[in-house]
Length: 87
Image 1 (spheres, helix red, strand yellow):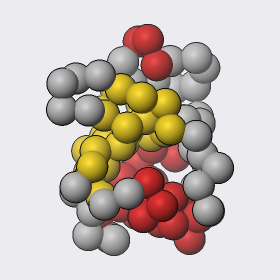
Image 2 (image 1 turned 60 degrees about the vertical axis):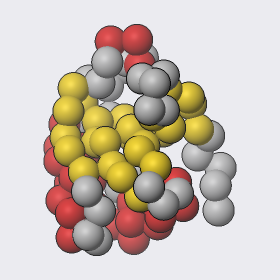
Image 3 (image 1 turned 30 degrees about the horizontal axis):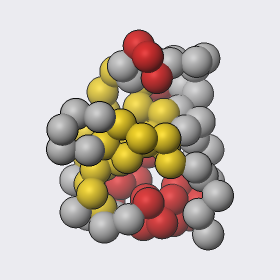
């Protein structure tokens, strides 16, 4: 399993995403966005464990939940921006 962190425009959208991932059976947690990730928005995101980004994006598309950015979180604590152009 990989761990992704998705940022949202508002805390409400982040909360909706957290519930959608939970309904889909994906381990997830709502948490503050690290300051270096914040560009604009509410400062909250969802950390989700899933096989790949497509799985997470599929849940968001079904629920019509837009997100700002997605990051792949590495075991060493580093994060890599993952573009949202995954089909």
